[in-house]
Amino acid sequence: MNAYVPILVLGAIAVAFAVFSVFIASAVGPRRDNRAKLEAYECGIEPLGKGAFATPSGSRPSVVQRIPVKYYLTAMLFIIFDIEIVFLYPWAVAFDALGWFGLAAMALFIVNVSVAYAYEWRRGGLAWD
Image (cartoon, helix red, strand yellow):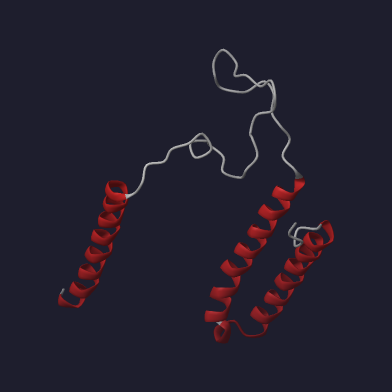
């Protein structure tokens, strides 16, 4: 049991630091609430178009503004990077045990990811305006 004491102490320090940081930030930090800060979306686009109003039940708006394709391309790019890292790290750790099969599987994966990158590049997802 003595081998686990440093791990438990480190965990307790991490939890105490997290709780202390949240408490101090809420106690000392400025409270400047505005309309944009209280919105549900932080992407800069109004979720409801002009003339939008909620239904009597309040669940769904009647007019919804279309979101540009650029946001979907950015989300797709994030997912591609995220999935690539999730698969590449364990593969790199266990590379010796996988042998040629692991190398071939990763080559196919990289080809698939390269197709996604090419699609993003062609659609303008990598060009920042």
